[in-house]
Image (cartoon, rainbow, N blue to C red; front, side):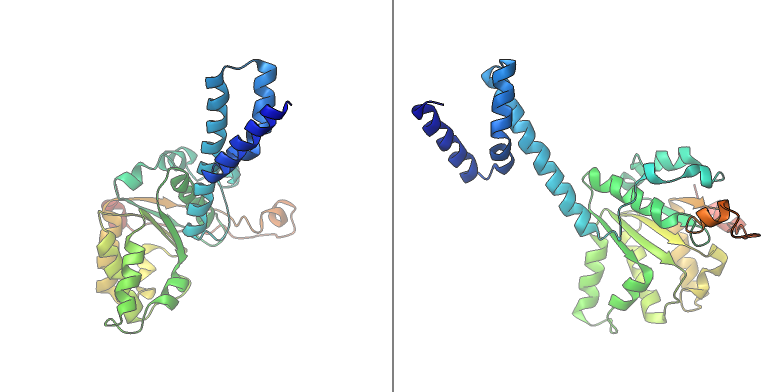
Length: 274
């Protein structure tokens, strides 16, 4: 490299750094070598550098959105073993992954016993939404209950409500493991009303809808009002199957007679879904 070329190279590096084009700085030598060997035009060379920068920025934005979504772990649809749950309609799940339900502000309800993959599917669909640029937030119902202020007049009540209303997709996991008191139940009702026909949701539950009043402080009127809004524009995925967590032991024959639990929709719930 001549002295003049070396100076120009340093100037280019310095200018890229000043412009915070960090990926272009790190890729400069490699792309320049490839351009020299391939006899690229100046436009091709610049295009490749810009492509490196844009790809890196997109990956960084994706990582930030994923962190803000607060997924407990990363699970994709490709990692889901549909063959272990033959009763689950893979085509329907793939259709949901097109994310039209988000644009239509609809609700997905994943119902089934523990371990059948409800949370996996919820996270996988959430990741698809993150990749598509949607704001997503994941929380378990027990975590949410702990965060609800104990007074409706507390400014944090409205602040929490706004925070959970904002994301285009809200995922509420593990509905049914912990019963809510009347205050938390009212908060959930208010949240569902806020998001109704405005923001998409995914709920996972180990209980059939006939049992949901036991979740919401035994209040059947409030439970009916919540379900009425959730089911109006919804897709219900009713998973009947065995636990993924015990799959290896079941397949190895270590656990004999392990029950296959099914969770069935009530006739009323079926009429409300579409």
